[in-house]
Image (cartoon, rainbow, N blue to C red; front, top):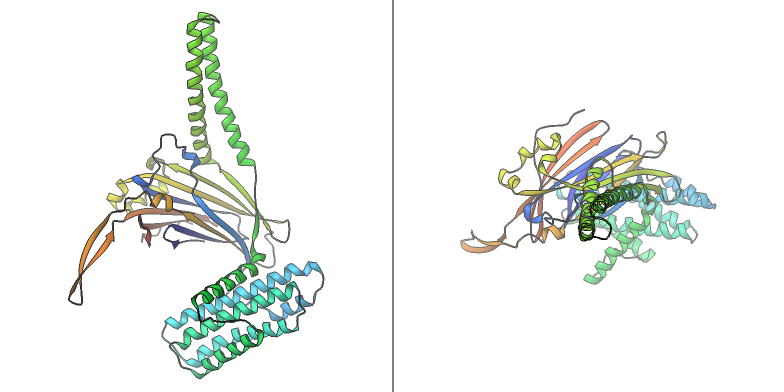
Length: 455
């Protein structure tokens, strides 16, 4: 359901993948920060914790790996349809086809790192992919110019580039004659249709890769979802603010009435009581709303999003989320028992625990004929916290080829991550150790543990 990976030295990425036919799913991510990375401001509101977050939600067709969804016949039928109603169907079918073939090429490209088997077997895996790309080129040649033609042109060039790269990756270690023939065929096709598969200069290669990356994003637009933030949580937040203000005003009014009754309207005690009560009124309002927000968002969600399909107004998914901070004694029992897998010295230095909670509820028809896969891609920026770490380095000496080499080694600080998942009435907990320094994220380690999955 959920995977955690490193994007670059300051960003973590969570990839969530769900079947839209499930009833609901949720996860909580606990970030155990060391003391110097925790926010120690006295005015900090725990309920207002909000990481710098980039997010993208998509909805794609999901089928088994053996069941190829690159149906050239279906694409051909959709190209002949003139009404606008079939245009989204064409773009979705094309995106399904492109992503299916790209996944197959990705697997073939990875295979070049493994020992080669029979060359004929390898050719048998390449040939069906190459034949489908050739069929797409033939379909492009018959298609009149227009929006469908432009999208299909982007698809054929993108697939040809990745096929060319996969072939070259194998040619580097394998001298099979069929590889040379297939490579020459791809170069001849690129020359015929006037597009490039490679470039001699660094700038040209950068532009080429950027072009094909943009092409893929354009082709994947049918998967994108429209996100609308609902106002329920905002109303609740304003009601909490109003209640805190009412309590503060009630205190100030009670003090004013009591002083007025005892000393009169125009007396010195009444004057000082008004000043002091209004000083405390502002503090009560501020502390009260922070306290109430903290308590509220631990049991209810801060934000509520509804995602809609790009080509229709149908709701696809409801997402509720909360961000807050807690102390060690406020942890759930299920998470507390996993802290024994943390290093004891590191655990003692933990001062702040940030929690990110997200809940999913599909809104699509449970009896849909074509299964769909919902993907939620979240990128968390940790740069501000990591830059708070001191940049301490130490010299390390080692012997290399009878020579003593000196290397500068950063002092690292682990950030522990606990991800608690609940999906299809199953619960599981994953533990990670994020090795970091002021320089950024060094590596992500999975902490091995006994099986705590309960059904």
